[in-house]
Amino acid sequence: MGSGRHAARGTLIGRIATFLAIVLILVGMLAGVTYAGYRYEQARATRILPGVSIAGVPVGGMTRQEAERVVVPQVEAILDRQIDIRAGGEEWFLTAEELGTSVDLQGALDQALALSDGFDWKARLYHRLLDHPVAQDIDLAVSYDAKAVSDFVQGAASGLERSPRDAFLDVVDGEIVARHSKEGQALAVRAATKALTAAVRGEATDVDLTIRSIEPDLPEDQLGMTIIIRLSENKLYLYKGVKLVKSYPVATGQPGIYPTPVGHWTVINKRINPTWVNPALDGWGADEPAFIPPGPDNPLGTRALDLDAPGIRIHGTPDDASIGHYASHGCVRMHIWDSEDLFGRVEVGTPVIIAY
Image (cartoon, rainbow, N blue to C red; front, side, top):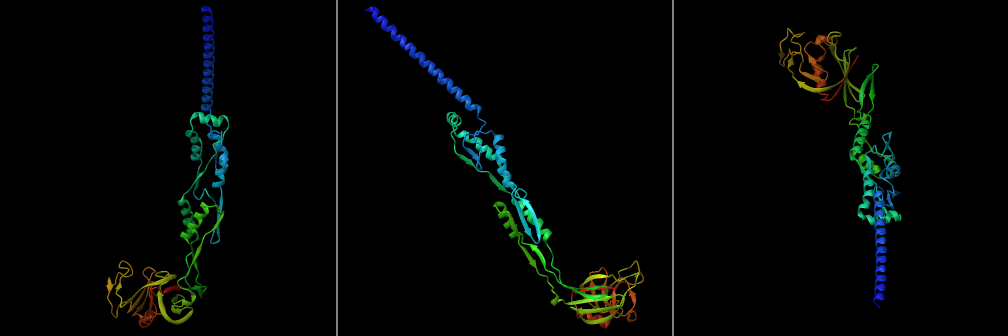
């Protein structure tokens, strides 16, 4: 009986040993499989999980560089969108990128790769090994630089600006000519910036920028007084619009020595009983006093119209004999009574044309 018991015990121990051996083998195999799985997952750690897409483009299983290559066309489609801009007869073709649009592709790639951080290695292995998608689409972050739009609008505004032109008289080939007024134009900067910003941020491919008209201050029907001095005649003509109001004999500058300057000028000051201040103490006025107060001997008479031509004025003179001759140092002389008559008819701002 003892030997039977011993045989049974031996059989049980053998079975236990076999079982333990099998368990150890299985545990070893499981550990091996686990380690192999871990190594497999780690070897693919630089790849995006299956099922991930960027802007609708599948990038699962790709490295960063591979994903970047397949998403670049989407980025280019955003940046290369051409916008046709029209304003005031001008036209520009610019891309969204040139108008300040940028796309954060690297940020999207960072997000795609970082998705794996939300899973432990076993879950990542599950998704990678069985190609089980995580179903995640990442948007491309698009940014807009308002300064780029503003800079374009300001540049366009500068190029499109047209100042209005008032009506005025002119002398062309000896003839009196009325120059017509012209409207000006300016880009409506605020409205243009708003419209272009909306086009850049949206999907528009063309945009019309608003141009506003600027009316002249002086149309033809409101053309006022104009003084025209003809040097060849030594005559001063006063026009209201295109109608001759009055003419006066004058004396003008000595040709080649003290010429009266030809051109378009303006009355900038009116003086009653002006004081004469010697303009050439070291020149032709060396024998004259520094100034002469108002009175019968004042070279300016009783009235003076100062022009924006340096040192030039229309004034009366006590030297009546000089009228009709080239006798002055550049100014336009008139009989005193004529200077007083003209003085009362014109205002500061009256245009003056001196022509041959």
